[in-house]
Image (cartoon, rainbow, N blue to C red; front, side, top):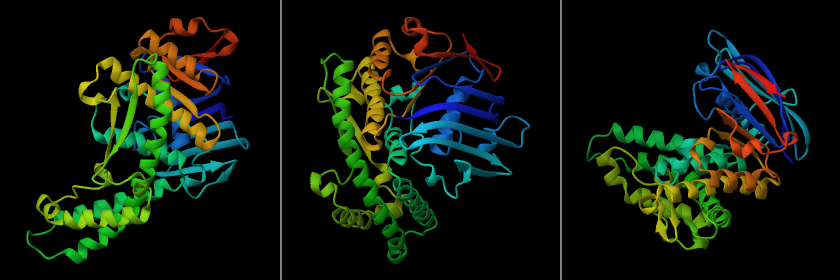
Length: 376
């Protein structure tokens, strides 16, 4: 069972120095806007992912006029107690596991699983493909250790191929040069497609059940991975040899148009997955309520998927989500997750859904100007 016992922040966002000891079940973080509520969740997620879910530039994460930031978490994982720390100083990031330096972020990957749920995630259904790809990739990086490497290799090869295409003169014979980058795209892309396909297959089963509970059995959710390779059979979509050959053909066939458009038009970087509600595509034909219920089901499915793969529930970080959900969905979320995952909720005020909970079942923190106080 994964539990975050404590968190120390130094010079992180608007926190000079702050230490919090957490409840093993539910932690409610209240305060006015711009006081630092989300910053606490960001710190937890940084230790989990090795990066912020809000900002890629560490210089913008450290406290104003500080020359470093430091984070330290004490946690209880499946294999026992651990201390996890991360920081940034002299324009360099660093991580430690049990006080021992880590050479690569992959050495701490999977130790502190988190699922982050923000208000914009409720628009997962109706937004563009890049949002849904990010949803898949973010969770797969935590769950499957090698995925991050394949994804990074693919992105590097894609950038190099696109840069090469932008410098070309039309009608130039460049097949040999392009084939070098295409081989990297093909080898890494085949693994990405296979793993995403498997991920969607698992999410489809889990989200269908959760969505049924959220909708009272009135609606059925279905997911479908969308790719130029979508016509492959289920067995072929999980066969790397087949995928490598099909991607190789795809890039070769698209060269002329890629040269004309000066970019790589097809591949895993353009893939998507469709979300159907009662066999109707939710992005275009679902009501706002249906879209939000489907998005909530998908986020909660992430939590259950981590349990199936890792053997325990991740931390669930809910950043001001309750203000965007109606009473029925708030109650359903708490009912489904409260006695499973350790939950962290930010809100401006404690809602009625939580006031009825026994006081021994949660901690309430009040945040003001980067300082946190436990409310008795």
